[in-house]
Amino acid sequence: MDKSIQVSIVSPVYKAEKFIHKLVSEIQKVMTEMEVTYEIILVDDRSQDNSWEKMVELSKMFGEVKSVRLSRNFGQHPAIMAGLSLAKGEWIVVMDCDLQDQPKEIIKLFHKAQEGFDIVLAQREDRKDSFLKKLSSKLFSIIYSYLTETKFDNSIANFGIYNKKVIHQVNEMNDYIKSFPLFVNWVGFTSTYIKVEHAERDSGKSSYTFSKLLSLAFNTIISFSNKPLKLFVKFGLLISLCSFAFGVYTIIRYFTGHILVLGYSSLMVSIWFLFGILITVIGVVGIYIGKIFDQSKGRASFIIDKKINYGE
Image (cartoon, rainbow, N blue to C red; front, side, top):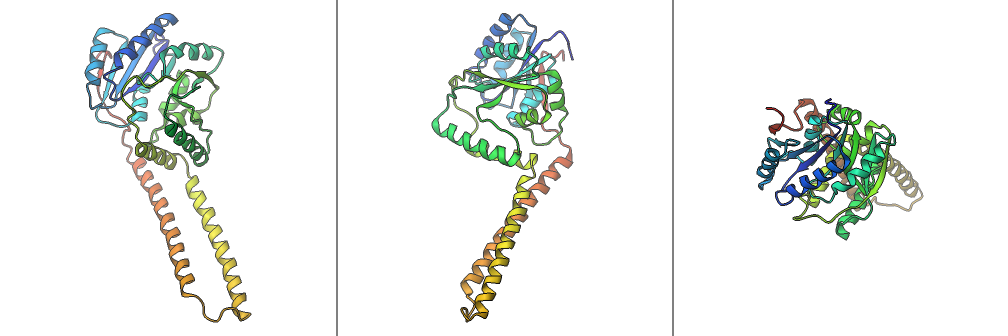
């Protein structure tokens, strides 16, 4: 890596035309105060507004602002990975572009990292989100942690500072489904977190709808963990045990004269119930096979269309 760059700031961009200039301006102020050499890598996830045009303007004005455009909309995490693949700094900061992650907090993250940590995560002390969003996020974190067998804190997102060796290992992970926080959690290294201020969204609204969050969570859980399969195995064994116990109970009642005609309703309910479980299990197995198929294709999880200020 280029030793002349001390800090790389990577930010995925989507529908950010109204605040991208402010983001870059605030980052520049912080970097000047820190007196470090830096680069700002903005990755346009094929926004449907004029974000790219604004990024081009900034790159023409400032050589340290490097703009990258993907060939289509791949999603936030592939966009982050695209930026990380180009980062040259000794330390890499990942932050969202909507200014809820505040650039001024980079100073605290950087100073904490100098104490000997490879990863310093930003914990949002008071999330400036709606009650419903915070509640759904909390429920999501509980389920997510359980199914992926990791410790997922909903007060911590992508914002943080990472040593280049951490990012190198993250870049080496060739999982087709990308999840930056899970990758960071998996690679290990010495980590800590500090509390930071979380700001209101500067303008507009989040592009993550509930359905998109649900889809992201589902795909990430399926690609990262086989625990759903294990749960279905346990559930199947439990159903078998209950069925066996119920069968023994029914036979005893029959021979003791309590059952003269076996019930049609209970038989049909049992059949439909067991077939429902069977079809569900087959469906889950099919999804896992589908993910294996996607991984086996070896397709890139992102494609870079254009780069500015990379000497090309």
